[in-house]
Amino acid sequence: MNNLILLLLILTCSIATDHALANEPLGTPDIEDMVLYDDEENTPEEAALGKILFFDKRLSVNFKQSCATCHHPKKGFSDGVAFGEGTKKNPLGRNTPHLYNLGWGSTFMWDGREPDLESQALGPIKSEDEMMLPIPELEKRLNAVPEYKRLFKEAYNVTNITSLEVGRAIAAFERTIYVDNTPFDQYIAGNKKAMSKPAIRGLALYKTKGNCIQCHDGVNFTDDSFHSLGFKDGDIGRAKISKDQTQLGAFKTPGLRNIELSAPYMHNGSQATLLDVIEFYDIGGGGAKHTDKLIKPLNLTQQEKKDLVAFLQALTQPLNITAPKVP
Image 1 (cartoon, rainbow, N blue to C red):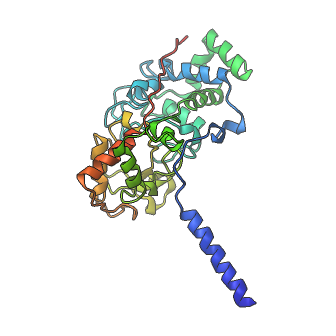
Image 2: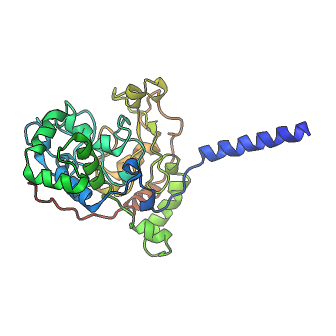
Image 3: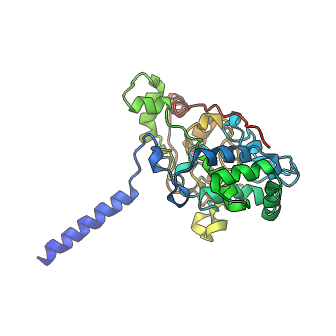
């Protein structure tokens, strides 16, 4: 009897461990699964207000930069350059990440320093390197604009605008920036002509020889975790935030929806094209001692590399988001 109980315990632990290590299946994101502020559904008024704030340059200290300056809709909600730039034209240390499908995220920024979408929205505004606007000044500026007073009253029933509502509004808008009807989504829904033959081969490689699904899994093609790709650029990444030396050089796995639109790639913008990214992974990453054990040479053929790129391109669904009138 004791032996039977022991066997059952071993099997249970084994199953639990396998489940924990299993990759989430690829699929189409469900809006109902979005992570919401205080579990409250965002209203159209919130999202519309957040969109205006997203494009408003008064959110930077010198009135020269808005969120959309670096996260430009026509540049894949990135900026098209290797390293971002602060409002005073000062160079930043990392590539500007895209904003697609962040509504499902659990941690934000390359190093994961922001725990939710609302704090992610406020982070660059008050950053001493980016938009450089102190929170008291942000609140003062917005409260001085009658139209903003009206819009915040409609959205949140407040008479005094605070950074809490600003973060909530921008996050509400960012939740509208999502991709869920790409050729890939149509393909898995039953339209077998939605993806090209190279893309279909690329999907198979993505899940097998390409080893991509080890980190880029789930409906948004990210494990929302941190991995070191072996870059020797001196950026310690996640380790600065977690104080964990096992996360030296580790950065958040970016989601891959609309990834074709947001070149260049990696936290340091070192890879100009998707093919460059595949080539980098094929050789086993950057070679630093802290390289994640999941990163290893792939020995892909040239055709396999092209097929993987074709699949990544099948995750594209351009969004038509235009700038609103700013009061």
